[in-house]
Image (cartoon, rainbow, N blue to C red; front, side, top):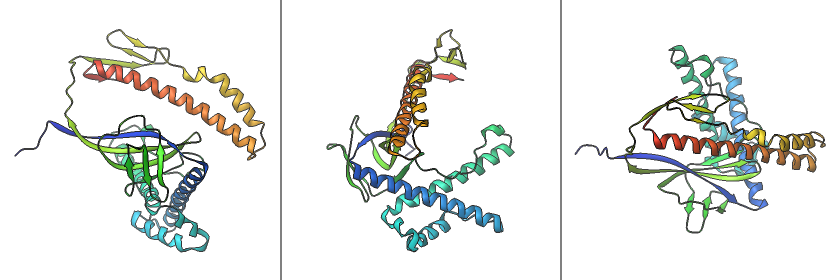
Length: 286
């Protein structure tokens, strides 16, 4: 029998806010910090060895080094973090190098512009994109709005929608002081057939966010301007605080929340605009 072309595989992510206490948040910050440490130390080791002999250790060699780091007295605290989360941080480093070298090949072949080249991996900073991922060992209980994570146990989340398909991996990430879980799922769906047969061209602009070839246009959102005064006052208050004091941390968190609000409003606008365009046109040319 031939392959069934009436269905396609769909990968989809579902993101929910976690409902955790301070102890659980402390554990998550520790796990994210351990993953960041492993990533940075592995990158530093790669650079050091490459400068000495032109060789860059790969994923397998770094995994062996990670096992030795756990046995060293000064880094024995790595044992407290989930092993697979630490391993995923090394996988992320390997994938970052692959994207860098692949983009260099495309540049050499003339397929991309120099500005599109993906740079090499950089060292991670504390408080920026704190996250960790579990490719296995987790369990999702949608009926009770909770998820089981290794070394964390059952964690409740704000169940705002049903998760469809087989859960393949989960990632935990901190955004503006709040922790979120992202669940990657896989399922077979019917091959989509667009009800429309029309095509439209889009010209991106500044005065107008997008101008369509059919004469319609989309006005810009300017979400930053709407929050500009509030952000300026928060940043001024933040700059006057003593560095690393409690008030400094509170002011920093407030600035982060405003930036997150601006990003969420902008993302909502982009999703609604792209949905309206793709819903009414079978082909879109930008």
